[in-house]
Image 1 (cartoon, one colour):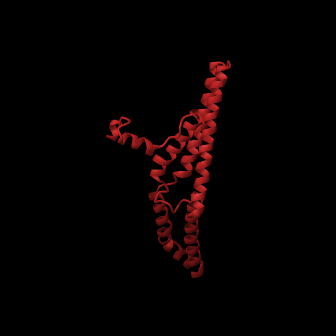
Image 2: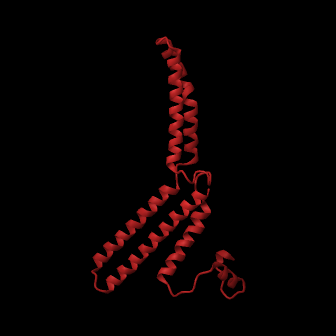
Image 3: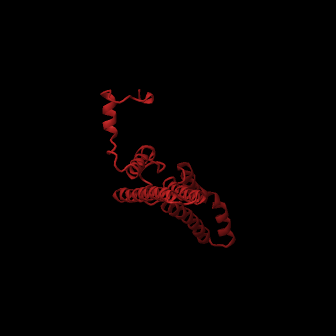
Length: 186
């Protein structure tokens, strides 16, 4: 579990670093526009930025959203229950070859091949996070923690003189009625 957490932390840090660098590219594009970059070239730069960020997000989704649990369960059942359906074929093969050992060997080989294929696919899919959650998806991490880290990082980049953001402080100020509470929090 330590190795999985460390790997996920490094991946998250790299992704956030890349997003921050893309934010800096956006700022540099604005500087170039002020310095006289033609609008069509600026639009092309922004389009490339958008494509890069979309592709990074696509790679991130491939990494985190693996194949569904139902598909993995079906593959496991298929690898376990398929060999008995081939048993009559192997019995006929052993009878035709006058060698019961050959039929048994082929049946064992088929069972081992299917099981090892399933296990190797499971390990290739992601060797680190398979044990963390049922589907490998941590909803709280994806919908609360990661976007918050990314938004705070972008805020620091674009508004570097602004005071640090503290959700607890804002909620406390709302409770003390220094700030108006939004309707969805009322």
